[in-house]
Length: 267
Length: 252
Image (cartoon, rainbow over all chains, first blue to last red; front, top):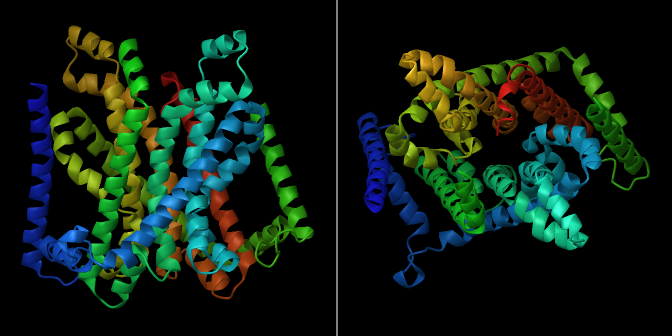
C-alpha cells in the first residue's frame, strides 16, 4: 500500500512534468520563434555541448571541463567557506546573547546589501578570477546559515543546559555534543537557503567577470544570439540546483534521522 | 528596548573600527573608503535630482514586484495547500523552476520583453513568488486539526471555516514569506539594474556614475543606501508582524 501510493505520487509528479514539456514543445513549434527554441532542440544542444564524449567517460564531453567543472568548483568552494564561517560565528553569537545583540544591527544591514553591488569592489580588490568570485559567493550566501545558527544555538532545551551543568560537562564537549546537535535542524535549514544563494551568486559572478563557467557561457551565447546555447545554460543551472538540493536533503535526512524520529514520538 | 540600544552601540563600534582601519591605512582607502567618506557621498547623491528620480524608480519597481508576487503566490499557495493532489502533481515542475536564478534569465527576458522597467519587475516577481508560496502551503499544513474539527462539529460552512479558522492561522506565515520576498525582490531589482544597464533605477545610476568611472566611494554609497533601505523594510514588516500577528508565536 505504502509503496503503491509512493509510486502513484511519483507517476503523478512526472506525468504533469511530461505534459508541461509537451505543451512547451508544441507551443515552441507553433510559434517558431528563435528566442524560444523547443525543449528537444535545447536537449540536443545540451548533448552537443556536454554529453558528446565516449561511453568510457560516461558520455561526458570536453565541454564539461570548461563550462561545468569550474562553476561547480566555485559553487562548492564558496558554499563550504560561507557555511563553515557562518556556523562557527553563528554558534559563538548564539552562545553569548549579549554579543548577538551588539551584532544585530550590523548583521541586519549586511544581510540587506545586494551582493551584486559589491562585485565592482571585489573586482578592484581581487581582480578578475576565482578569488573575486569566491568572495562574492561567500559574502552573499553567509547570512542565512549565520542567522539560523544563532537561532539554533539559542534554542537548546533548558533541561539539557541544566543536566550538562549538573554533570560538569566541559565547555568544548558541551558545544560539540549538546549545542551543535540541538542547533543542527536550524543549521541545515540555513544550509539549504545558503546553497540557493550560492548558486545565484556563482552565476552572477560569472556573468560579470569570468572566462569560463556556465554564467560566462550564458552571456557569451546571448552576445552572439545563440539562443539554444543560452537555454542549454539555463537548463544546466536549473538541473544543477535541483540535484544539489536533493543531495543536501538526503544528507540532512541521514544526519537528522534522530531528530525526525523524536519528533514523531512526541506526536 | 535594550536590545535595540545594544544594536546601535554595536553598529557605532563597527563604524569606528572601520574608520580607524581606513585612517591607519590597514585597508587601502582607495579600494575600501572609510564610513565618513561614504556618508558624505550618500549625502551628495541625494542632493542630485537625477539620483532621486532613479531612487524613486527603484522603490516603485520593488513595490510593484512585491505586491504582484503576493497577489500571485497567496491564492496559489492556498490552492496548492488545500489540494494535496495538485500540490504533488506540480512539485516536479516547481522543483525545477525554483532553482533557476532569476539573474540567469536577464538575457532571455531582455530579448523577449525589450528593455525597460518591466524586466526587473518580471524577474523580481518570479524570484519572490517562492518564499510566499512555500510559507502559505506550510502554514496550511500547520493549522491545528482540533480547530478544524471543532468548526466542523458546529457545522460551520466550508467558506467560513476557511475565512475564520484557516486564514488567521496562515496569515503570519504568509507575512513571513512576504518579508523574505521583499528582501529578495529588492536584491533582484538592484542586481538587474546593475547587470542589464537599462539606464533607469539607482543600480544603473551606480554602475554608470560609479563603477564605470572607477569611483569606488560612490559604489559604496549605493551599497549603503540599498542596505539601509532593505533593513528598514525588513524591520518595518517585522514590526507589523509582532504588533498585529503575535498570537501565533513566532512563525518560521
